[in-house]
Length: 331
Image (tube, rainbow, N blue to C red; front, side, top):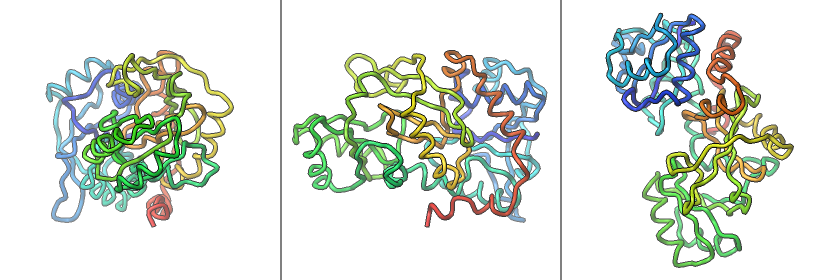
C-alpha cells in the first residue's frame, strides 16, 4: 500500500500522537509512507495534485526516530503525484479549506481520501452533532451568535452551561457558567473570538466530575478508549489543560450512544473518529485528527496504529458512490 499522511506540521509531531503510531505501524507492515504538510500541496498545469513529500519508505518503525526525522525536516524529500498512491489520510487540525479543496480534486481523480473531505466540512462544526436526531444521546445544546439567545438558554439550566467555540479544539475558548448571568457575557465573547463566531451553549453534566471518556471509533466499530480526568482547579478534560489519562470501561449507555451515532458518521464519509462521552452522552465528535491511540494502547493493550493500518488494507475498491458520500449531509 502506498500511503500519504497529510498532517498539520511536521515540526510539532510527538511519539505519542496517533498519527505517528499509524505511520510506524504502516512501515512495520512494509507499506510505503509519505508525509505531507498543507503548504506542500500543488496543482499542476493539467489539474493534478502534486505533493512535496517526506519519503519514509523502508525506514525502521521507531516512533521516536521518526519524530526526530520529521521535526528536523531531515527525512528524504520527493515530488510525487497524489494519485500515484492508494490512500490519503487527512490529519490536519484546524480545518484548512484549501486542503479540503485539493483533497477533493485528488478524490475525484480516484484517490481514496479519509476522512472524506466533503463530509469534513459539516462534521467538524459542532452544530453537526447538535442537529442529529434525538435518538443520539447528548446534552441539551444550542448553537448561536446571539448573547441574548445564549442567556435565555442558560437561565433554564440549573447545573450551569458549558460555553465553547463551534469550531475549535484543545479547550481553547471554553468556559463554564454556573447560574450567574454576569459570567455568561465574557464566556460567550471568549468562545466567539476563539472560533468562527458561532458559539455552542451546552447543559453541564454532573457526571463530568468523574471524567470524560475518549472512545476510538473505526468504520463502525469501537477500537478502545480511555478516561480523561480534569486537573484540580479546571473543569476541562483536555490533556493540554492538565487532565490526566486513566483506564476506563465501556458501559451499555456508551454502546447505545455509539450505535446511534454510527449511521450518521458513515453517511458523512467518516472512517475514523474520536467520540467524547460523559455519562453516556456524546459531548463532542472529533473527525479531523482524532487522538487517543497512545493511551488506549497503554491501558488496553490494543495496538491502535496496527488496527488502523489493517483496516486500511481491508478496504474494498472504491466505487463512484464513495466520491459522493457526505454530500447529503451538507445539503
